[in-house]
Image 1 (cartoon, rainbow, N blue to C red):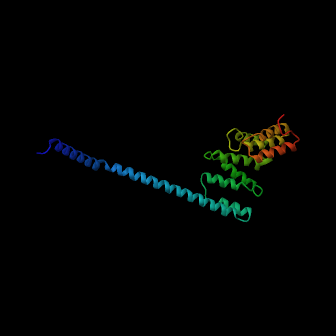
Image 2: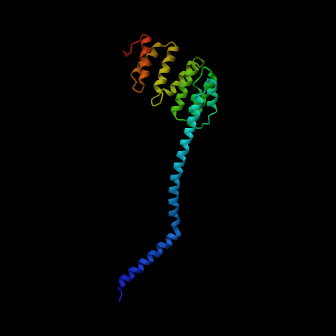
Image 3: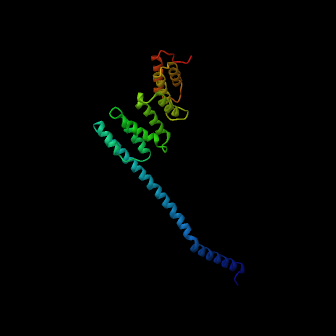
Amino acid sequence: MSNPDSFIEEVTEEVRRDRLFHLFRKYGWIGVAIVLATVGGAAYSEWTKAQATARAQAFGDAVSAALDQTTPEARQTALAAVPAVGEQSAVLNLLLSSDPVSDKTASLAALDKVIADASLPPLYHDLAVLRRVIVAGADMPIADRRAALDAIAVAGRPYRPLAVEQMAYLDLEAGDTDAALKRLRALTEDQDAPQGLRGRATQMIVVLGGETQAG
């Protein structure tokens, strides 16, 4: 005689297997799809990383080749021909502005492109603003240069100390030596300012006949 409990357990187990088999046949594709999506997503991520690396390397090689040209005109022409998008365009335009002596108008135009691109991080935007003020020089009214620097000389901006230094020079240009000395003294004590900048500020204070420490 067979044990009734054992028989019931066997039947129950068989029913359970049958249900699982039907469930797998009905919904098993979902699990397969999840596995494929996971594997495919990882593969796509690696592919996009490889593509980004390849683009960055190609951009770097093209820029390096352009900078190896023997004349400023040839360098400018070669740089202008380098394909670039996004932050690469910002880098390229900053490089195109690096020789204002030969073509000041073109340098300013390249910087204006960076400044006008609202999608760029402050790192590029502020550097372009700072560079434009320096390149434009006296061709740009002092009030306009001061307004441009004011916007990037606030706390938290990446080139704040350099902007403050340029504002001190604007004070001198406007004949306000006291204001210039005040900014320069502040820079000598500014822990965010690079050592070289603090040194320049100290030297300028001495040249102007001021005290290196605020009285």
